Image 1 (cartoon, rainbow, N blue to C red):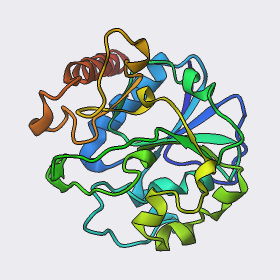
Image 2: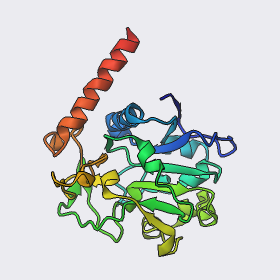
Image 3: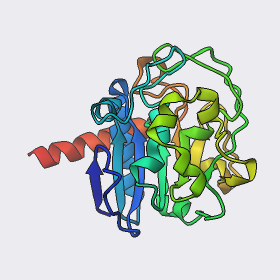
Length: 253
């Protein structure tokens, strides 16, 4: 399907309800991861997508993001991700996803699960990482609801999400934001873990198709980092990366 690519859309833009909006967290150190994530989404999608990169530099230039980077922020989008509802103009549904994902299934299957009863929907992980560092030596922090915010479906028009203004996102604590503390527990819907399959944590049961990953999350680090070049599912990411390079070469020629 076709896509619309932007850095991030103006809140004033009117979006077609037929186009599903996806915001991917962007960090300059993980440009390859971003490109592969985007490619995998588009390749499998049967519905039109509007994909936007959440780039901190652009948000700062637009005076939407101004908080100082803290020692526990492993990526540039650790907090800017929570601007997703604001960037849609608080309209409709949208998804935020970390750039270290690889999609193996049609995102339309996930969109079909959207339920207006909830303010957000995500995988309710029970995750306590064993490693003390991740990616390129970034500190691995442990907190309740860890990785819930790494892939979130936002009901952007939900009244509670109107609280996620630039002022709040730039001033609130990591605990408040990553634990969804602006919401009640019953306002946080659940989706199957296969849509945020944590490499090194979630397991595939060959006799249970529901355990097969539809979105692989290289949460500790992916094969674009030398340290993780042999991680589980690295072959799938590398194959996608090569496919993308060949497509770009064909377009260039």
